[in-house]
Amino acid sequence: MVVAPGTGWPGDLADAATPVATTSDEVVALAASAEQLGDLDARVSVCRACPRLVEWRETVATTKRASFATEAYWGRPVTGWGPADARIAVVGLAPAAHGGNRTGRVFTGDRSGDWLFASLHRNGLARLATSVTAGDGQALIDVRMLAAVRCAPPQNLPTPAERLTCRPWLVRELSLLRPTLRVVVALGNFAWTASWPVLRELGYDLPRARARFGHGVEVSTPDGLLLVACYHPSQQNTFTGKLTEPMLDAVFARARGQIGKSN
Picture (cartoon, rainbow, N blue to C red):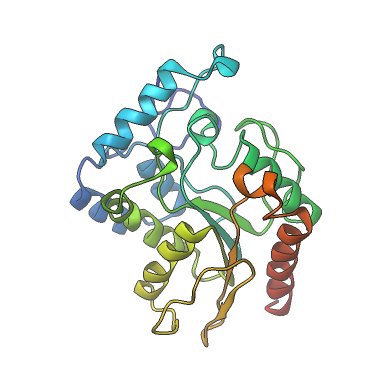
C-alpha cells in the first residue's frame, strides 16, 4: 500500500488538503506558487503528473522486494531533504525503487546512500554515517539532497518527457535555496545534464556550452556558484572501482572548502 498524506510518516508534510498536480501545467503552477520549501515538499510528495511513474512506484510499493516484505513502502514522490539554508545542494537522478521509494527519503535505505552518507559524515556534513529509515536521527549539515526526477522510474531510466515534467519542482527548490546556495554537486551525467538548464533559468551565468561530464569537473560562475560533477555512487561504479571512497570524499571536501571560503 502507498502511504496516505498526513498519516504520520516521518517527514511527511502533506495532508488531505495539499493540492495535487496531475498534469505538467499543474506542476508548473504549483511549483511556482510554493512560497517555502515546506510547501514545495508537500506538493512534490503527492504529485501524479506522470502516469507511467505513478503506476511503477505504486506497483513496487505493493509487490515489494522479498527482503522488505514486512515493511511499509512510501510509494510516493520523494522530496528534497536538508536544511532550508543549505549552502550545498547534492542532485541525484531519481529515488531508488526499494530505497527512497520505500523509506520516503532520498538516498536513504539503498547502497548508493550507504556510500553517500558515509562520505558526508567523514566530511562533517552529516550527523550519522548511515541512513536506513526516515526517522533514524540522521541530519544533514549545510547540505540539501534532491533529485532531478522525484519518482522511482522503471530500470532507473526516466523518459525525457518525465524529466521535463518534473523540472519545475527542481527549479523552484533551487530558487528557494538560492540566497545561501554556493555549491551544486551533480551525481552522474543525468543530474549534470539536468542541472544546467535549471541553473540558467535561475539566472546563473554558466558558459554557453555545457561542460562535458567527468568526475571532478568543475565550473565556477561569476555570481559565486561552484558546480561540481561526481560519478554516481551506484553499485555499478563502486563495485568496479570506477568510484572509490577517496574520490567521493574529495568531492565533498572540495564542496566544504568552498563554503568555508564564502563565510
